[in-house]
Structures are given as C-alpha cells and as structure tokens.
Length: 215
Image 1 (cartoon, one colour):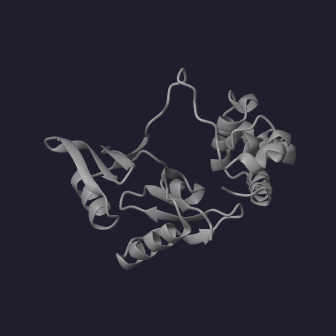
Image 2 (cartoon, rainbow, N blue to C red):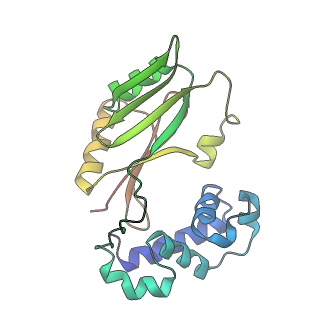
C-alpha cells in the first residue's frame, strides 16, 4: 500500500494534471469528489481545484472522508474493514473494447498478451471475451470510427486498466510483452505516487494499462 509520502505525491500530480488541462484527470475528479459529479470534463478543468481538493480526492480513493482522516488512519490502511453482510459485494469487472475484427483481436490478445478466448458470438462474430487469470476484456465489433482520429493517443484515453500483485510481476509481464513484439504506448515506468505502470497499444488503437506496486 502506498505510504503517506507517496499519497502526497499523488495529490500533487492530480493538481498538476488539472492545471495542465489533462482531460483524463477530469473523470477521476468527477468520480471521486461529489461536488464535481454534475460537471462535464471542460467544466471540471475550468473549475477551481486546489491542493486541498486533490488531497481530498486521494483520501476518498483510499476510503477516507478527508485528508485529515487519512493522515490519522494511514497506518491502518493495509487492513481494510470487511463489508457487512447487508452490503452488496461487487465480484468482478470487465472492460469493453471496440475492435474492427473480433477474430483478429482475439488472436492479438491470446498470442501476444497471453489471454485465452472465453467465447465469441455471432456468425460472423460481433462480440467476444478474452480472459487471463482474473482479468476479462470484452470485445465489441464496431464497423465505423468511434473516436476522433488520434485523440486516444493524444489524450492517453485508456480502454482498460489491469492490476498486478507485485513489482516482480509487473516487470516480468512487461519484459515478456517486449519480447513478443508488443507495441507500447508507454513503457514501464514508476509513477510519482510509487505505482509501476506500462500501457499496451492494441491493433485497434485501444490503450490497456497494466499497473503494479513499486519496488
């Protein structure tokens, strides 16, 4: 679990991205801070956003109501409380990626990224799913452009994020993908808050993030 110093760096990074007008951070702010819930991306990036707001965002992402609560409770963050029996428990999540050819997409994710086909549906197929361990990616056939040309690379728009458990796992996975000739949008690097990440660029332009703990 990131320590308090890394959480401070993460808050400063959110503040920097907001000041630079980095669009992906707008969705993060909207989902994490209730007062921004009704605003679109442009409105969020134009709104006042201070370090205290960024710290509150980090605190809420970590399960605390405020930055002060996070600071006082940070030592206990490695042992989150279990949900009560009356609370619904979410078991899994799957991203949906838009592709031009279901079978070609399945071949890429299986041959290059080590996934396996769960199913394909339709004749010719227009929907499918690939999985590796606990990560599932749904593939949806789309015959027309969904995004403005170049915007995903320019704005770093992620199609999916996949987590790993250890620093050695994220490094090993990156090296195996590198050896397989996978195209990277971003090579393996350590983020300011301590997480190690890399981003794969699939043949349809989808950006898939892989993230794991730092060393």
